[in-house]
Image: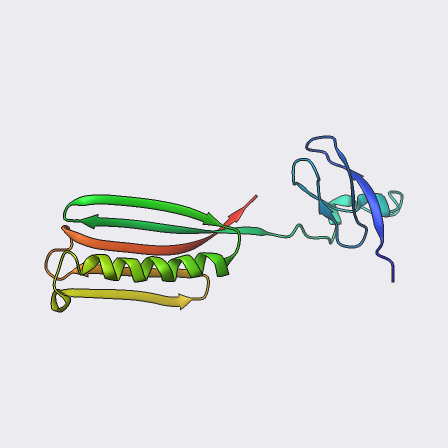
Length: 146
């Protein structure tokens, strides 16, 4: 079965791009989502009532904020998939636990983790009684991009 193709002119950059005539596609120059408008009979349709939805795109932001013996650390990494972000999140937790043992005894360390939301993760490890001196907060946040 051959895929239904059409060419659409991007109203953002003016580039003509071949896309799928049933589901649309992305401009090869600027990345804007293009609907297959040329497949419609303009004498019979009202574009304001178009049922085709623009698919949402997301990125996943891994944020690490820490304080190690009052020395602050901040890191932010962007991933295109939750799986990649989660892998790095797990690795960052492992490193934070190892690092914390360089600053406090195991009995003086506590942590909290929230995994209630499947695509938003939060972890915090800290020295009991002295959070401001030694702690590390790691999170993954899902963010829609336009």
